[in-house]
Length: 457
Image (tube, rainbow, N blue to C red; front, top):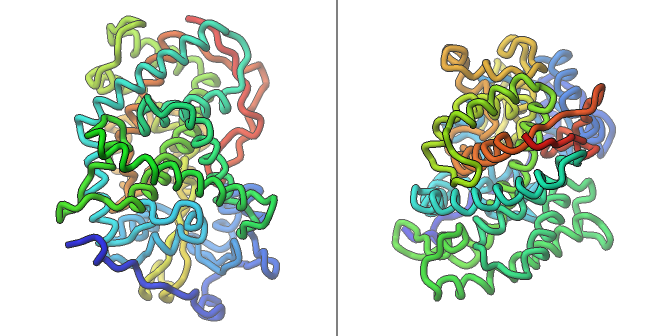
């Protein structure tokens, strides 16, 4: 089947406002609804709404009346979506569509399946081994720089620069050259624009900067694709996609590659920056866990100058548990929007086609009936025994179902590789009495950059 023959999902208009009034909730002010309130403290807003209205409630965000469905059962219904009731295209589209159109997360059903299959070639064992080599070298060099200049550091901007640099080499190839700064700055502008309150690219706005950033990205990738194809198969992700094919053997179109590269680089960089910052912040706040993970890393028997292998990563089970707990506390995608393509029923409520619905990872990850003392960092929640009997959609930092993050294993690989070098070389701590202030939406980040102190081990 040619990809050009796969039609995009149907377009939808929101249901009439009075078709949702049987569902409890409060839509707030005209036009802006509850948007500013939700953005100010999304965790508190959702928890307060759930306490008042229950696990299904009506709200008004970003100019539209929509429903929030909460808890593991809602996650399973919407993310697993066995009945194909929900469109990701028309859920994420209003937020990301102008800047990251037709990224994998914005495709639906059969079209999504076909594109995901084509992209999966970039995440097979051979390319992953190449990525690990590049990541390992880059991480080791950066940690060595940090070790040479110990003392206070703002963790988030340092981590952001590291993940940008790593994305540039493992995704674009080491030979990207002087364009790298412009490319990474364009991505920063696009991500900032995706959650801007002003949704039109008016002069001087974040959206205008984001749209200009996308133009630069499109121009760069469009120029590079024929060059990469002429060179033959490179080991970076971009080169892999330039040679990837659909089921009929046709190469991905230039537009497909541009759209997928834009989206994958955004997703890989911003979510990983958030997660690694959260992970290191928790280790700084819990030195007993930092010691346990350092002992695990030292027990690998890998010298400071030696490369990291997949076997090393596999052996880092405590580290993986701590990473999972950091992802529970601060999931990199705190909420996930969809749009109903057909009428459906949930928790006794009839919900019409066209309704915007959202599930909330952050809420589920802090439900005390699932996670006792939910604000406490406790990696032991992720032992095999502790996970037995827990709802399979109680922990969903990578989504679920057909749209489960395609880069999940890449993310774990990079995070564990980072943990190995960091813990082997550095000790991290917080100033007494210091509590980082986190902004939880759209992607969690510490408002003050998260001040830590590094000391060589």
